[in-house]
Length: 293
Ligand SMILES: NC(=O)c1ccc[n+]([C@@H]2O[C@H](COP(=O)([O-])OP(=O)(O)OC[C@H]3O[C@@H](n4cnc5c(N)ncnc54)[C@H](OP(=O)(O)O)[C@@H]3O)[C@@H](O)[C@H]2O)c1
Image (cartoon, rainbow, N blue to C red):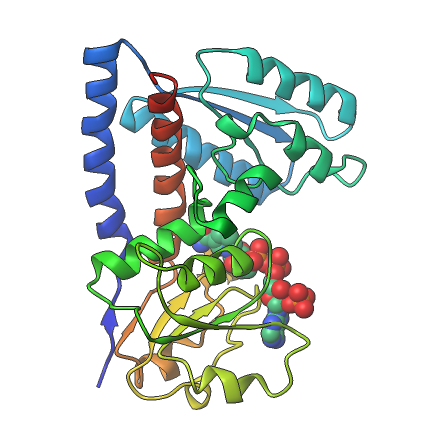
């Protein structure tokens, strides 16, 4: 039987409607317009697309956005100086430095320089620590989006075996943490797999909920999952171009073979992707609201 589609595009739309109301309220009752700084260094085409999408989302929702594009040869010192300026600007409640940065810039130093209260990506070590303890104000955007997809699709995670494939700092580690936290976290039993895992399929076949973020198309195939699994495919892989020159995207999961066994699955595109930007907007609004206290 074909799996139910977990439609990120629709769920994201519902959340954006709520965010729009929150923004209107912040403006009308408190005279505060949430503001987001985006900093792009270099010419990476993927990064340009992502920053453009974030700027567009700000415009649609009524969030003030200030975008700075810097050339690839910008010094680390200049990037740090810009971050410091954004930290001081009361009209900017969130700061997003688009990763990856050019190799001569130490991304860790740049992230550490962001005021944790404006760290809407939730990459600063202070916020990562709070996430692990379960006291964080911000949740990282992609993992937060995944939690909302599960919750709003009525998928009960409590007591389930969640298997996460991939241990990156932006997806794998934080989503594993959120899934194991007591409610409102996932309250699941979690296994985290990576390239050091021996016989990956042994673990993926045990998954009630399988979350895949590896960055390689078709890493998970139908024979690697059990009947009734819920699959969240985080991967975004450019596998070719249409005759019109548009990128053809594929996830990390072999959709056709896995959806025959799964109870529910996210499509790529239209699954996790739309949620990530929406949760960034949500964090920016949270950061603005926090300044009222
Ligand atoms: N939709 C969205 O909004 C969104 C957001 C972020 C990322 N993504 C996509 O999600 C994917 C992953 O992103 P990322 O930033 O987490 O990637 P990443 O930093 O490259 O990390 C990939 C992780 O997967 C593990 N891995 C790779 N191949 C594996 C295999 N065959 N078996 C088991 N583990 C394997 C790696 O293990 P090691 O640590 O051992 O190397 C690593 O931990 C990418 O396609 C990215 O574009 C999408």
